[in-house]
Amino acid sequence: MLWSFIKKFLSPDPLVKPRLTHLSKPSVVIRQELEEEGIRLLYGLLDEYQTYHFTTDDGWQKVADYIYKAFKFPKYVDARKDCDFFAILFVALSQSYFGLNGCGLAIGPSPEGQHAFVRVRSNSGWWLWEPNPDFGIKKFFRDGDYHGYKTQVILI
Image (tube, rainbow, N blue to C red; front, side, top):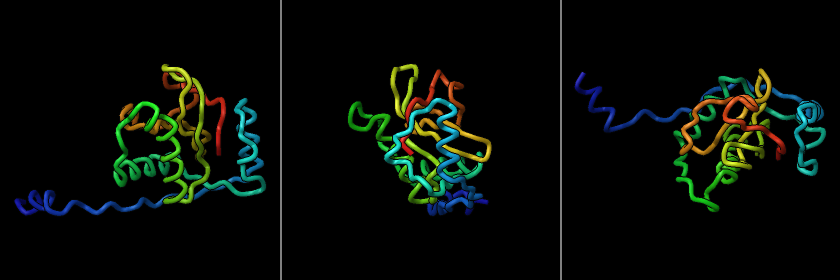
């Protein structure tokens, strides 16, 4: 018992990349879903006629947990490491480490005014994620369900 206590301090458990269920939809479906919600897409950057890859609700939570354990996110710094920085970082890590391109940088209203956050596609639809760890939000939420966050524009 003493050894297991000491071992915690000597060699932490290695971080294991989570296994995910990979799901996909063609870009035409992704575009249609977003447009039906009144979300403006930056068309030149939507990968037309390609497949968008995403995971389950539980899978996205595993992705978020892994990213925040594996990478030391910097502290918020106004106009240098702010909302768009954190959203871009989360989206880039999701795509590069997990092959999930069914997420994008979303922009819309929040309690503090216009804000950048992350929007992800899952098995149950679209979810939002606040990527700034200093905000203390540790779960995904739907458009409008958390302090009025609402996607108006997405870069996906």
